[in-house]
Image (cartoon, rainbow, N blue to C red; front, side, top):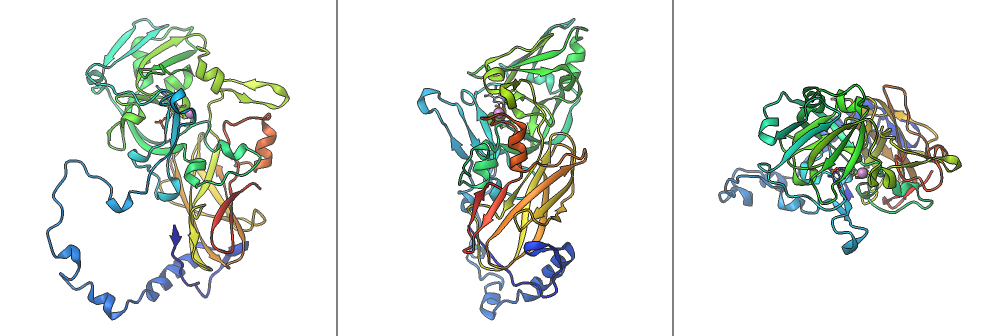
Amino acid sequence: MAWPRFDVVSDDTPAAGGGLLTRRAFLKGAAALGAGAAISAEAADAHLTGALPSQKAPGRAFSGYGQPSSFEKDVQRAILEPYGAAAPGNGQSFTPLHLLRGIITPSGLHFERHHHGVADIDPKQHRLFVHGLVKHPLKFTVDRLLRYPMVTRTLFLECARNSSRNALPEPAQATCGELHGLVSCSEWTGVPLGTLLEEAGIDAKAKWVVAQGADAASLTRSIPIDPAMDDAIVALWQNGERLRPEQGYPMRLVLPGLESCIGVKWLHRVKVTDAPAYSREEVAEGADLLPEGKSQLFHFAMGVKSVITQPSPGWSLQGRGFYEIAGLAWSGSDRIAKVEISADGGKTWAPAELQEPVLSKSFTRFRLAWNWNGTPAVLMSRATDQRGQTQPARSAWLQQYGAGQRRHYNAVQAWQVESDGTLRNVHL
Ligand SMILES: Nc1nc2c(c(=O)[nH]1)N[C@H]1C(S)=C(S)[C@@H](COP(=O)(O)O)O[C@H]1N2
Ligand SMILES: [Mo]
């Protein structure tokens, strides 16, 4: 992907080393670009009424459900099925973060993690059971749930194994989406799980809920009672429409700020218990490896994280000059407080602009103007949330864990810009 270049603004103000500019300089730059965007007489002629091919005949007819432009057909999730026919439907597909802007992930590009394929469920046949340590076990149809009071929140979902290839000794060469795209952000609408648990009347001994999916994996995950009661959502709607099958139609759990691995899709059972289930997924896949050979189960909170999505590997800069750096930041604990950007491999940092709205446990879009001088540079972003948590350097992240840890990778990403304008993943 080529990235158009603009001429440098003459009176730019450096915000940090490596050509990072202040917001003021950027605004002046934008004005200068506007003034500089003169078009030739021939180009202007093409804009005379009726002169364009698309102005000469009626356009395509109406459609019941719109699709992206045919010219955008390369904007796709990257699919990884590591076990092939040995474990059909087990794998993931990655959101192409480097091809998207804004904070909402289009539903058709939300990342996928399935253990045994996408269940195809008739909502009329589907039931949700709430049982276990409760006074009144309950059964809900989809129609009945749709009558409950709902909440809507814009929340990211991130797999605990997102970005895990960066934990490997050698930097993997892949796009930003292939490296970091097991995270997406949607507007979710549904019924607070707490409402259903309260209606069922939970026992004083209740400490966990064990959620299970109606898919071929019967995916089973244990969730502490506090987040289950406080802010878990039985989501039925995603970005204004009913959930996509890939996201768990007709209903899934959404747990704000916690790893999406416990957000059970195709949700059909919530059992209140006094102990975790120790299911295969939470024991075999869900353990953090600590130094000194120990491992920790049930660590669900997602850290603070950011990544520069534009430019990133796959993009190529078209020579020295003005570019806008853009990226995404998120934290499982709170709102993003600041994002700093470095263009000189971490020697100096400048604050990026945060695009409103800055929401808790959601994507936040950041941007900063950059005047690239055409020589090798290293771009990095470092996010801090309102709790004061800052993204660790890669070396500090590695020290927190034992060898082989692949979960909860949230270290600062470095993109090496080569003098030919291409970018690659580097470990710093
Ligand atoms: N029933 C069921 N729920 C599931 C899974 C699954 O395979 N089956 N995968 C889990 C994992 S590991 C993740 S990261 C998220 C992914 O959600 P998504 O596919 O909507 O992005 O779903 C979780 N819920
Ligand atoms: Mo996951």
